Image 1 (spheres, one colour):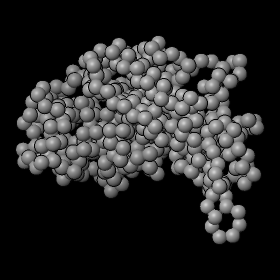
Image 2 (image 1 turned 180 degrees about the vertical axis):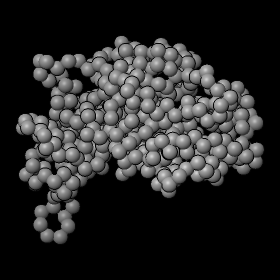
Image 3 (image 1 turned 90 degrees about the vertical axis):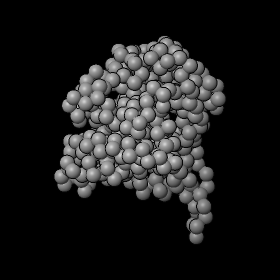
Amino acid sequence: MRLGSGPPVRRADASAQDDVRRANLSAVLRLLHFHGPATRSDLVASTGFNRSTVGSLTSELVKLGLVRERPGEVRGKGRPSNVVEPVSTSAHVLAFDVTTSTVGAARVGLGGYMLQMRRRLHSAPPHDVPAVVELIATLVAEMQARAHPASVCLGIAVSVPGSVRQPDGLVRRSPPLGWYEVHLADLLRDAIGDDVPITVGNDGDLGVVAEYLRGAARGERDVLYVRGEAGVAGGVVVDGELLKGSGGYAGEVGHLLVKPGGRLCSCGAKGCWEAEVGDAAVIRSVGRDPRESDIEDVINDVAVGNRRAIAGVRKTGEWVGLGLASLVNIFNPRIVVLGGTIGALYPTMEATLVQGYARTLGPNREQALLVRSELASDAQLVGAAEVAFADALEDPAGTLDARRGTGGENDEPAQVHELRALGS
């Protein structure tokens, strides 16, 4: 499965005609999904296919209901090329972002269109797993009821701040939520049903997917994403591939040891990076009590020019820079995207962050560009949606047939899907 949005890779080894056709359909739909409407002439130029092939492929996608064609603009002499565009109401996915205070939800149509968004506060403590599952199931029912009657739900993906095992979606540990060994994908399948694929992913992984495909890192091949919240999440793309590790746990950057003997981390160790730069640490740095204040209070203090708040945030910036420097030395990214609290406070901590960051970097300092997330709090929803779309982009006809129940006799019901790599 491939999530990349760039030029398609032609399958030279695809010997069977149906494999070639599937790859070609994927190439055209992927371009439209990530880059929006295009003329047939544009598709010819982007794919390298001839005009008759593009015409045949777009006609098939029209029959599937995934795209539509309309007359193009008349420019000069000659017949204008038809414009092909994705149909956002023909197929959709449901994306969820579980945080310590809320569950975010989105119904996203083909082409990446946000058709519906919700964010609900937890009615029970976030460690109450059955309550979170019930809330997600309720949101699924509500959003499905608002979907176009003919629209097909291609999948459900959930972002969680914690270590998530692949491919079964077991949340091994999520200190911010108080979850340990939670079979979230199984619980969701029991509550929602198993007629659509269910994916559970780490919030850092889904954040980097979002920024790589639709955010601040578009067009780059090597990306580091860091999100500050109750903890610190990270995701890494190396040469266009999502770095997962053997069990899906790669990118647990919050537990990088930066200060031996430092603050106690929620994981039980001392001196972890997130213990020094997470929301609680930022709140303490400005003289507030995390039991009485939240990070929004700090952001508001900074916005009105509170000197103590600004000084505390800048001090935290030194530790942010130190941790980033270690990660940049390891992964050598072209771009570092800062999201969550770190992204929100970056303008205030920039000077001290860059100072600490540059002190321990070599030549790769010149390559690793620091930027704020373009997607902000929506990054996890966007990343989850793209993971849920991935199968349809890889095999449009086969996936749509399976979801509509028109596949062959050997089709198996969809259950749990893995958060898989970017690229071909």
